[in-house]
Length: 296
Image (cartoon, rainbow, N blue to C red; front, side):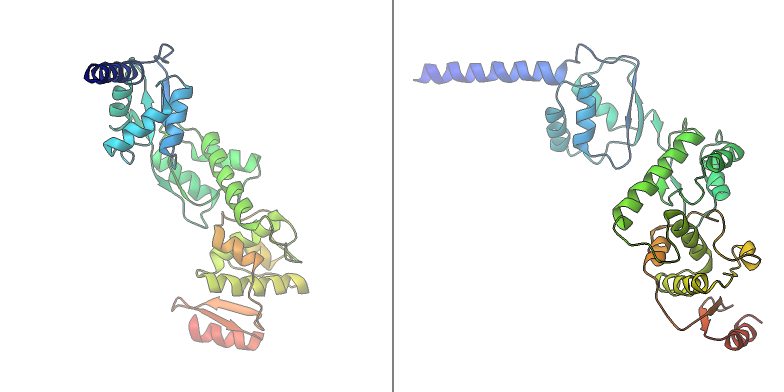
């Protein structure tokens, strides 16, 4: 009996040793020497492991995930690109991924309401190779003003204008589908383009969620009556009725939501006073009094 236990123990050790040799200490036969591997923002440990296995960098995604978790390094994998310039075992890959990437991702934050030109300047500041003029030209050619979603992005130093724009548009599509797919269009804002355009105006005209919804109600009332919008952030609205032809900026979720869910009031006019607060009026006479009181 004792001898049998010894045989089983030796067998178990041999299996463990073989397992360690195959999955931990030896690189895959098809290791992609000379290639690169990028860790994306928001990517899970499981996703990283699966891609490493698919690209033959490691032998087992399951073992990778378990080992990294056991070491407590699942939060220490850096975002960016790692160059696979030599064959590495799984231990070597884990050590590499938990050091600084060969090409770290940059962090560029785009606030709500930034114009396309301001977005181009922000990315140029982070990546000097980005051409502001080319960035703007691509957006205009693709008619994507208003569809560059405000968020924090993590581009590679090698990212070009088209890649960044595509990423921002994809984020817009994702957020819009998640929050507004089933929201009915307001009567006088009947298309996505109209929603984004009005939301871009709200970004410049109001700051808080409530004020955006109130101003949205006022402007939609003006659209319904055929009155000119007459908003300072879009001077053309003083000369013509309706919305501007294209969005004047790139709105965030709060402004878009305010278009779909305006607050209906008896107000027709509003202004932002020198005190930083919104002041509303029902009649033009009341509005003139607010101008005299809060702007002069």
